[in-house]
Image (cartoon, rainbow, N blue to C red):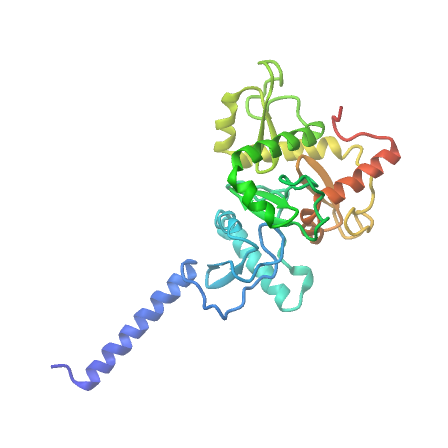
Length: 307
């Protein structure tokens, strides 16, 4: 028979053990906070869009908000250091340091395909201009963002998703080919065209070109490695005749806020005054591409190896 004092001690010890277990689980990211808890961030760490208020995960006891469920997987692929930096910056923003707000890295793919923004200015179903019916409706499929003119087009897209992605790929390949920075295979190193027609592959809304189909599996095994090589080639080639000395987003002089940010989106270089402009660039890249193209036309130059 257990005396009252012994029972109290046993229950107290059990409570301590349970609390420790709950704390460890929260630290591992496996414990969801209650529905009433606030997320530490107001901006999705992947897309840069406002969080939707209903899509969350937990990391080290902190509730992280997202714009949609598709972004959670990409976040979970980040290493702990990158997650810690995001949480620290987000907490700094909540405390009132607006310049510390965590920003997505649109020019640094990591793990599985990062959610690269949809780069066309038309709806893949209606063909209508995005924005003509209000703010576009955004969906993410396996790391690929798609934007629609209205919610009514989503069901039609998903009914024939493979066919519709093929149409998107065709348009994006045509859009990005003039800006592709390499004339050699990023994997094999051989001259593109030396083994027949180059293989055009869309990776997370981004064009990658191979000398042959055999290079695709090698790329998919280490995408970060090869995308960084393409990024650097884009910067090296397009920086030479970049037509603006001001930030295309904010308009400030490049260099007035420290070293400019060289962002690569869809194999195009966009130079920004600071990383705070990255979410705005990602929200509407077509708008800023058009501004850069207009400036280039005025200067009479062409981008990279554009033909």
